[in-house]
Amino acid sequence: MAGLMDGRAGLVTGAAGGIGRATAIAFGREGAAVVVNDLEDRRDDGDETVRLVEAAGGRAAFVAGDVRRAADHEALVGAVVDAYGRLDFAHNNAGVELSETLADTTEAQWDLIMDVNLKGVWLGLRAQMTQMAAQGGGGAIVNTASLAGLIGAPALGAYVASKHGVNGLTKTAAIEGAPHEIRVNAVCPAAIATAMILQQPYERRQELASPQALKRFGRPEEVADAVVWLCSDRASFVTGTAMPIDAGSTAGIVLPGEVT
Ligand SMILES: NC(=O)c1ccc[n+]([C@@H]2O[C@H](COP(=O)([O-])OP(=O)(O)OC[C@H]3O[C@@H](n4cnc5c(N)ncnc54)[C@H](O)[C@@H]3O)[C@@H](O)[C@H]2O)c1
Image 1: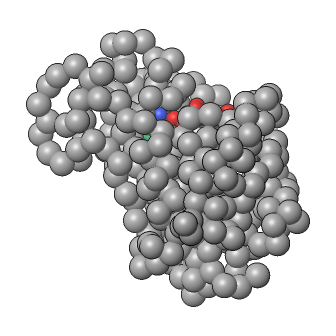
Image 2: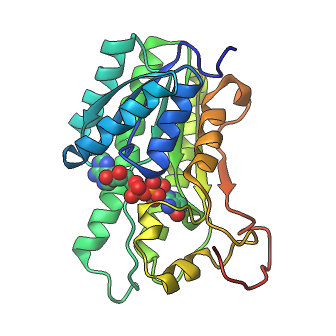
């Protein structure tokens, strides 16, 4: 059966685990070739993602790189083009979290969150959109924002600011990309069961998930399916959106209850 992404090639940042790994696997299952990126010290986990993409039916290679560095984005895009001929899609997904009040956030912590979550996405968009515009034929990019890109949250100020920034960048990128048929969207997940959430103490996990009407943590695959759809031709008229994948968190007043 034909896959949604047959013959397409692209990249996923922050794909050594969590949402990025699930997305890379989902792209592979739909017939794509994927360059899997993460930090050098996550190489073993990145190689495991490659193995899982191949097992799902796709082609893949791991390329280490730090999304804070422009040269690493150029190298990532270059790796996709060298290996597979063109860049059809990109998922700017790498991110870091900080649970700290505004008063207790240090400048170094602020800078790290902004550099990875916001500058990292801008540098990715710049490299990817330049390549897509030059090669012609359009392309699709998805940025991982967050529910924290749509609403505020206690002890999450730097992260909230960075993810609101990602949604702003996404809208502008969609407008600038449109003449080249490059679509750019964001996904805004609520609490998903990855290292980022699971490493938090029980009370903090409950706090972060408290806006959710569905009282369970999401699975990375539930975000991955939306990312693949947004990158596919099925979403050909969708650009500039910040899609909530949020278990009803932005639907309205939510009843209290334990999230499991
Ligand atoms: N888990 C959630 O509840 C949740 C909710 C909303 C949004 N998000 C966002 O989803 C994305 C993926 O997070 P996750 O939940 O899978 O957590 P995760 O920690 O498993 O994944 C993040 C990945 O990014 C990588 N990374 C960090 N800094 C990097 C850098 N400078 N260069 C390259 N890679 C880097 C990490 O090594 C890691 O593999 C993040 O942007 C996160 O903010 C997560």
